[in-house]
Amino acid sequence: MSPVLDVRDLTKTYGEGEATVHALRGVSLTVERGDYVAIMGSSGSGKSTLMNILGALDVPTSGTYRLDGVDVSRLADRQLALARNRLIGFIFQAFNLIPRTSALANVELPLAYAGIKPRQRRRRALAALDVVGLAERARHEPNQLSGGQQQRVAVARALVTEPALLLADEPTGNLDTRSTEDVLTVFDQLNAAGRTIVIITHEPEVGARAKRLIRLVDGQIVHDVRQAPVFA
Amino acid sequence: MSFGEVVRFALRGLSANKLRSSLTMLGILIGVAAVILLVAVGNGSAQAISDRIEALGTNTITVMSTSRNSSTLTKPMADALVDPVLAPDVKSVSPVVSASATVTYEGSDHEVNSFVGTTPGWFTASNTPVGRGAAFTADDEAQGRRVVVIGSTVAEELFPGADPIDRQVTVGGALFTVVGVLDAKSSTGFQDANDTAVAPLTAVRQVLTGYGPLTSILVEASSPSLVDAVESQVSTVLTSHGATESDYRIQNASQLLETQTETADTFTTLLGAVAAISLLVGGIGITNIMLVTVTERTREIGIRKALGAPRRTVLTQFLIEATLLSVIGGLLGVAAALIGSRFEIAGVHPVIVPSSVGLALGVSVAIGLFFGGLPAARAARLRPIDALRYE
Image (cartoon, rainbow over all chains, first blue to last red; front, side):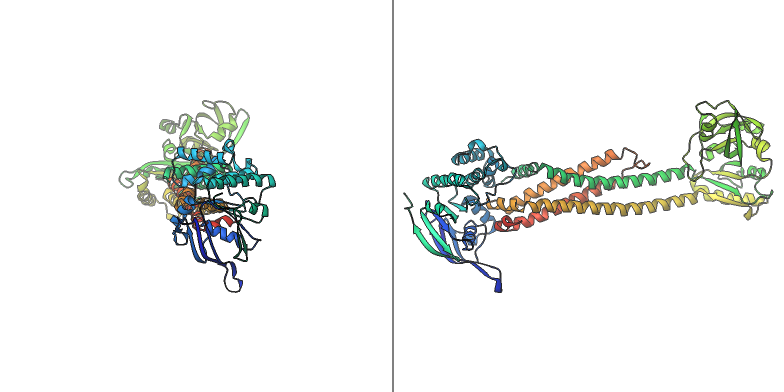
């Protein structure tokens, strides 16, 4: 079985000539199914750039990226949309819920783009909201929810399509301790249920809960430590 | 994802931003309604002008006396114009004398600007219908009976709140019986067209003007197209009766018609310019609001793409939103203009020009679609990360 994530010699540069910035200088990484990986690094270390490439939101300057056996760097726009929809669940630091739209409708959105019938969509969205413990807030709009609740809605939205990979870019960066704990508990449960999770953070206590810890400095991996076995 | 689903998405997108959606529609509504109403008001006033000129009579010519000497227009000349051989296209001839006179009734008096003496045919020829009562008859004229038809201003001045019919007024020391009141006419010049009184020619000559020359002769042609023919026939007859070219001047309704056409042309040009400018301004308004609306949602487009929305689905949703906004706004604008045109605006009754409705609606919808679709297409083409970072 191919690894969920297989990245080879990924580089990313911004700008040209004198002003060239090397955000990634050759990153290679494989992530097995069921793993829980935390990528840490100070700001400017290239971790967000890596995350955006892993989430198919951005394209690398060079290198290959296989997601669930599919070479994402070779996909056309339409297939890329499909990959984002089916293979990846992305969780943003800034939640990025659609404003003035109920939690339920937000969670239903990826399913709608996947072409799933409304009735089934609703059932699955409610189930996903139940997983993050917000089933009774389904009708609330984002501005009626706390930050932690919004992030849990975003997590529900990311996992509702049952993607191969959950990517979280500083998911607790905008949250207080209590909400951080709520969200991390959800991640623990999801991983225990077999979901593959890659999370970016600069908070040591968040990194400590992952099974594998990767440190990024200046666009290169300097540290790769397994903290717990993949199948605990 | 089915098309119906995308439509539902668009509707949800619109209802999620009710205030912005309704303001956008309001902007389009005002743009469309302003253009249609503006053109309607201009069209209405052009029509009012042409109506007024038509009210003067388009098939009459007026032969005016230019000099004061007695050999000019005379009653025999007027009689000679009724000649089926020399002037076959003349329908009627009304000799006219006019003077200003003071009309007195029970102590109150009123200075009438033009006290006209003529024959009964004058009423139809000059397009001056009698409202109440009746015009005087050919018999009245022949017998020189002292009867008078007064204009509405005179009626108001002398008989406020009372019925003037059968009352006797004093003019130039003689008693005249009021037999009718003229319909109110809209004035075309500085003079009040209703400050007038009309009496039989014989009576007026006897009492007021004496048996000197006529002031003018009103000649009615059988049809508006024969006005030029009648003009030359009149000249021939008048010359054969000893009048020279310098004695009289012929005023032709076709000259007025020409003026009217010129006026209408000027109006059309003016309106075209004004409508074009309003459409341009309205269009810029719609452009602005559409650009802002869609650009503001670039981030939302980024989120949707990150969740796996294909470019075409995003684009379709925003195009449908833009279509709904501009079509609904445009139709409401047409409705507003139709309602607005039922009221009198600045003294003009607007008359809707159908092509202006089509033009205003078409241009607004096209602009709405283009400037709603263009930024949406641009945003949908962006990489999700660039759309998400958009501020």
